[in-house]
Image: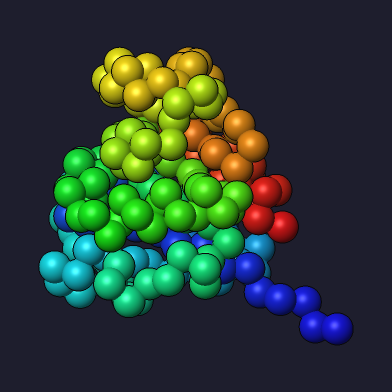
Amino acid sequence: MAKSVKKIAILVEDLYQVLEVWYPILRLQEEGIKVVMIGTGSKEVYNSKEGYPIKVDTSIQEAKPTDFDGVIIPGGYAPDILRRYEQVVNFVRRLYVDGRVVAAICHGGWLLVSAGILKGRKATSFFAIKDDLIAAGAQWFDREVVVDQNLVTSRKPEDLPRFVLEIIKLIK
């Protein structure tokens, strides 16, 4: 029987944090995991905070949660834009409810708040949004990575090696 290829979505919008998108892409590809870049549908190319462009593979309007083993929500200011799209919020919520991997780093936790999936969960984030996660019901920790069942969270780019390693462990 052929081994099925695992597939993970990475959500992007303008002002994404460049390392928090590109590091996971490269590491997941090294592991043989298919990475699909999904945008809000407002355009085909989004720019990082530093102006580095990324072309998406599809829009949220075309993406089906059942096609993915997980989703990564990078930080920067992109999550504040992503959370304004009901389809993005529903996509993340559906993956979470289905028990698939939902991973957020830095300000990515904003989207977890909007998806309403933090109540009673352990999580971390960039310290500036700590209060938002706590208000949403999370138990917040200042740790490199926090794994709570299918939820993986990290604080900042320096945490990327452990963050992505934990995603790989759960996906495989």
